[in-house]
Length: 114
Ligand code: AMP
Image 1 (cartoon, rainbow, N blue to C red):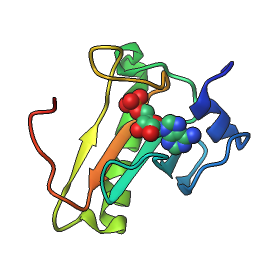
Image 2 (spheres, rainbow, N blue to C red):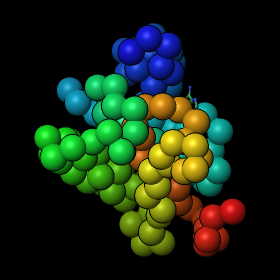
Image 3 (cartoon, protein in one colour):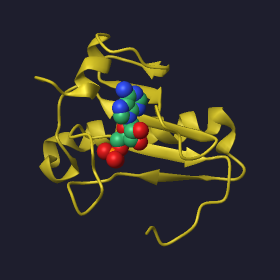
């Protein structure tokens, strides 16, 4: 959609370190990792943020979350766990307006966020 970076990645026009892809979803390593494991899981369809989702998106959201969980396990976070984060709009710290789940792991993470 337009100049959306993650749409560009989904279309293959912008390079990424891809981890997983199917018809509806894509996972790739974050460009600026904040933890030893830090990847993003996105829908290929342009959805601006989680606030825009409705009941019709329930199956897709379930797929994204379970893919995030499965890849976290594959990347070594099964034992220690990980953090699954969805930033939303300005107060949530969202900088890319295309829905994405962050998965961060491989070290202990503080709480609450700053
Ligand atoms: P958020 O602040 O929740 O919107 O997160 C956006 C994330 O996208 C940040 O962690 C960025 O480092 C990451 N990011 C931005 N551009 C790229 C890119 N081209 N490839 C991979 N990750 C990116």
